[in-house]
Structures are given as structure tokens and as C-alpha cells.
Amino acid sequence: MAAQSTTAPALPLPEATPTFTAPAAWRAIDFISDLHLAAYTPRTFDAWAAHLSHTRADAVFILGDLFEVWIGDDLAESDFETRVVAVLKAASQQRTIAFMAGNRDFLVGDALLESLGVMRLQDPTLLVAFGQQALVSHGDALCLGDTAYQRYRSVVRRAGVQRAFLALPRSWRRGIGQRARKYRDSPRLAQERRYVDVDADAAQGWLQDAGAPVLVHGHTHAPASHALAAGAVRHVLSDWDLERDAAPRAEVLRWTASGFARIAPETADPARPA
Ligand SMILES: [Mn+2]
Image (spheres, rainbow, N blue to C red):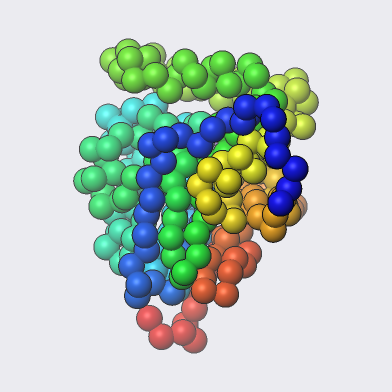
């Protein structure tokens, strides 16, 4: 037994953490996150759409930041959003597609997901599949070292604040979204945020509370698998960025009865039967 901490847990697992049990017939679940899709990311969009269409997995679980920014379902009528919505709707007729909100797209609404046949995943959720258990999260709630961000998060995740924002005219929301993106992408902010990672004690605490040996999360854009205490492991998902020719990034974490594997996104393969 590992040494017991005498201090309170850094961040207790939310009491309302739901459990999702995969159907017994499932053989594989894909996890992706942090695609940051936008009108100016056509290559990343195409790779994502192809994977959703051609993956051999029974389900694709999107663990947050599918969108670079989402400022209201009523804006889903514009061109880029319309194309994303069409891909999700077609994919959900082939296999289970699940969506967890990230810090960029927490304003995606239940009505939109329902209309697309996409399953909402709460953050965090305990998954049971293949006789195993894994806790999944976007990951931003676990970055306790980023105290300024955690203060911001506690405000913008309030239902009343979100209702007030969504009541603003569309043009205002577009302007706010563009300014927020400029601020987040500023070199100064990137420098400040570079070393903020998931808090290892908080991650370990969540797994102990959940009774699960595996945590899967995104958000940090630092894909790796980290050993935690007592044989537990933390799988960090890759972000996706195929817009630059140098160092393209796109990766899927596939969960099967054999465990977890990192694979390239699947594409149309004429040699493979549909
Ligand atoms: Mn994020």
C-alpha cells in the first residue's frame, strides 16, 4: 500500500460522476481530442471527417476541444459549422459518437447534440468496456497549477453566465470569440502557460475515488502515457494540427480488450471491405 496522504485530496472526484458501460458487442473505442477545428483548418477537418467515416472502432469518443471556439448553437448555420454538423450527423448513423465539452467548446448545447444523434459525455465519466475501467476527462479541471485559468473556468462554467453570454447578439459573440482566440494565441500567454500540466496528485486522487486504473485526457497537447502510483496510468491524447507541412500532428488512442494503442487516423482504404 502506498503511503497515505494526511491532507485533503487536491480535487475530489465529483460525486455526480456518471458511469457509461459499453455494449458487450463492442470491440474498440477510439478517443480523440483537441482538434481545434475552424474554417482555416481544412486538412485537419478532412482527416477528422475521414476517420469518423472509416474507423474500424464501434465508437468515437471526442474528449473536448473539437472546435477552436464555439459561441452558440444558433451560429451552427454558417458554412464551417454546417459542414462539421453534417459530418457528425452522418457518423452517428454509422457508430456511436460521443462528445465531451472542452474549454473551447463548452457552449455546445444538448439540443444540437440530440439533433445530431451524438451522445453527451459529462466531464469526468467512468467508462466500463472490455472488462476494464477507464476514467475520461478533457483534463483542464485537473490543471490546478494554472490558478488564473481555474478562476476563469469557475466563472464561465456557471449556467447563468452562459445564458447571459448566449443572449448577446451574434455579432458581439463573434467579436468576443475572435478577441479570445487572439489572446489565447499570444506568444506571451503561450510562454506563461507552457509548463502547466495536469496535477499528478489530483489525477491519482480521481482514479482512487473512481476505483479505475486508467485516466484518459487531452487539453495539454502533450501526448504521452505516464505511470502513476499503484500501477495506474495516465494516457494524454494528442492534439491535431495538419495545416503545416512540418511536424503534422494527428493521433487516435484506441481502446480494445488488449489495452490502449496509439494509431494514425484511419482513411478510405480500397483494399478493405466496407
Ligand atoms: Mn482544452
